[in-house]
Length: 307
Length: 187
Image (cartoon, rainbow over all chains, first blue to last red; front, side, top):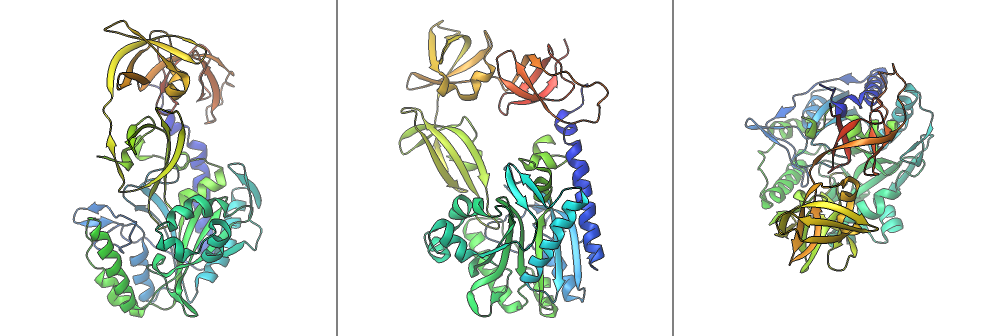
């Protein structure tokens, strides 16, 4: 029988992927981060309005390793990273597979701006490690990793590209639609872009800005229109966190979604967590960017359809 | 009702009392935001193409189209003619309504003609088809590690991406839904 070409043809991309993951590890180990592996099946995911955890034998497959990693921070670990599989139900498209790979890292004592700086160091490090220069192209669009990268607030970006304010977009129920159609395609043109300071309701696990409580200290990183990472200055106020979880869970249940139990262990230990910032970067997306792949299918060993 | 997540290229549906066929369909989801489905649809009455973005949770009235077994006969410019296997009646359908199917039409290909209110509006072709490669570059022998694609022209004139080891004259199996090469066919 002839070899399965759908699998065979990815070999070049998978060699590059392995080199990228290796470079990521070297980068974090060199900066004094401890690599951890936390359980992938958990009893209580963090409720988020538009992310669906898959039930697994009474518990759930993680949608991110966030809660377990924060419990380690609360237990005194200062710098942590993890590369792991995560699962999100019903997400399948040219940029999504329901089982995907996250690189998540946490830094005690830092805020989201500290993580922006770290991203500016990580991406060039990884690109150079696989022989890419600072300047390359992704799907015909120029990418330039030379720093500093663009930093634009959600407010500025909506005003500039969607001619409205984030509040008005939320009010009209078109925040996500405008983000996808008018804002995201313009981000990361040349240098990558940090889109920061999201409306408070769009940062369920993020700290609000002390000087502007209408916005959450959250950013997303984009290169050539491709969304790569999401970061927070982490919320460490357990009461506030419980209230936001309750709100998100109420919304989820109102849509008839599979109910989650409250993440009580996490909330109990959260008061011990020092101020910290955390970020999740899509490893598959990073590989797409650095290998000029049009779809996520080209950079994973198996898609669900191949199984 | 038909949930938006089940739409595919080629799905027909009724929207605002008009019949549409989905011509492109893309799942999009901004970071932590709501899932959306960006679609392009062609109005089967007017031919106009509209772009619409739907949200997860949206659903549609499914359409029931009559299907007749038929075979492809020939084409003349942009018009493609098929014959109903039972009545021997011939139907002509425009290139635009056929979409990607025109890439795979070979003589006598069995198809299903789709009718809406007695009007032929398109065809279903088999999901898997064996087609002959009539033109492609030779492969540098011994280059077993390469996973690069190369273009190959099929007997229908369609160009598909094939593995390096495919040669001119080979019969290959194509997934007509995605236009992807699947395998070489032993003869």
